[in-house]
Amino acid sequence: MQKFSLPPRVHGGRPGIRGSLFEHSAISGVENLPWYHARPICRSSLKSADVVWSMTSKGAYENPDARDGVITGLIAYTSWGFMPIYFKFVSAVPVTEVLAHRIVWAVPFGALIICARRQWPEVRRALTHKVMLFWLCVAALFVAVNWLMYIIAVQRNEIFQASLGYYINPLMYVVVGVMFLGERLHGLQIAAVLSATIGVLILTFSGGEFPAIALTLAFSFTIYGVIRKKVVVGGMPGLFVETLVLSPIALIWLIWLIQSNQPSFGTGDLGLSALLILAGPLTVIPLLCFALAARRLPLTTIGFMQFIAPTLHFLVGLYYGEQLTTPHLICFILIWIAVGLFSADALRANRGRTVAPIR
Image 1 (cartoon, rainbow, N blue to C red):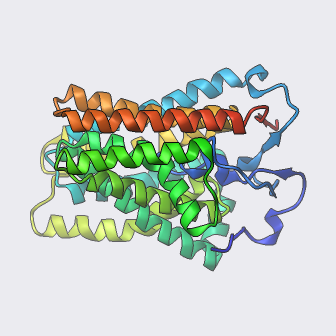
Image 2 (image 1 turned 90 degrees about the horizontal axis):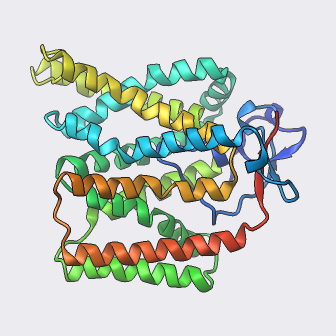
C-alpha cells in the first residue's frame, strides 16, 4: 500500500516523526508500539507533529513535561481499560443502537477538541484529499467493526475475549508484517508468536471455545492500524473524519428506530439518555489524553502503557463474575509470556531511543 501524505504545503522544515505515530486512534495502535520502528519523514507545519526522534537526548523523563505525560497516559489507558463498565451500564440498549450513539455523539465532542487544538486546517485537507479520504473511509469501516465487536463482547459477558484480543493485537501486527510486508521474525519475536499461538489453540481445542471475538478485535484493529500508518493525519483529526463519514449511517439507523418506536434514547429515562450521550466524550477524551502523553513520553513507555487496558479488561471480567476456566487461564498465561518476550525485545531494540517534544 502506498503511503499517502497531505498536500505539499504540509511538508518541509525540520525532519520529524509522522503525527499519526503518536496521535492514533481509539485504543492505541501500531505506531505507538515499542517494537514498531518508525520511518521519519518531513512534516513540521502541523502542531501535532512537533515530536522528533532523539538518539542522543538525555530522555523525556528529564523533561518537565514528563510527569504530565505519565498522568495523561494513565488517564487514557485506564479509561480504555474500564470502558467495559460503561457498556455494562447501557447493556439494556441494543448493540447497534449503542454503536450508533457512540459514532454520532463523538462528532460534536470531537469538533470541540478540534476547535480547541486549532486542527481544522488538517481536517479540511483530509476531507479534500480524495485518496486520503478514501483510506480514512476504509479505516472507519474497520474501526466500526472493532467497536461493534467490543460492545458485543461486553454485553455477552465475554470481557475476557476483549482482553485477549487487545493482548494479541501486537502479535497480529507482526503476522501482518511477515505475511504482507516481507518482514522477518527473530529470536524473542518467534518465541512470543509461538507462545500466543499455542495459548489460542489450547483455548480453542481444550476449552471448546474458538476466540472469534478476540481474533476479530485483533484483526480489525490491526488492519485499521496499518491503514492509519499509511495515511499521514493526526489522531484527533483522523478520528473526527472517521466518525463524520460514519455518522450519516448511524443517524439513519437512529431515525429508523424512532420511526419504528424502538429507540432507547429520549423515551423518558433521562439517565439512560445521558449515558448514551456520554459515549461521545468517552470516545474522544481518552484519545486526546493519549495524544498529549505521546508528545511527552518515550515511545517505549507508551508501548508498555498499552498493556494497561487489556489487563484492566481482565480484572473487570473477574469483577463481573466471568468464568475463568483452566483453558482460559493457560491461554492468558501464555499470552502474558508472549507480552513479556515482546517487551524484552522492545527494550533491547529501543535502548537509547527517546522522544523529546519541541516547544
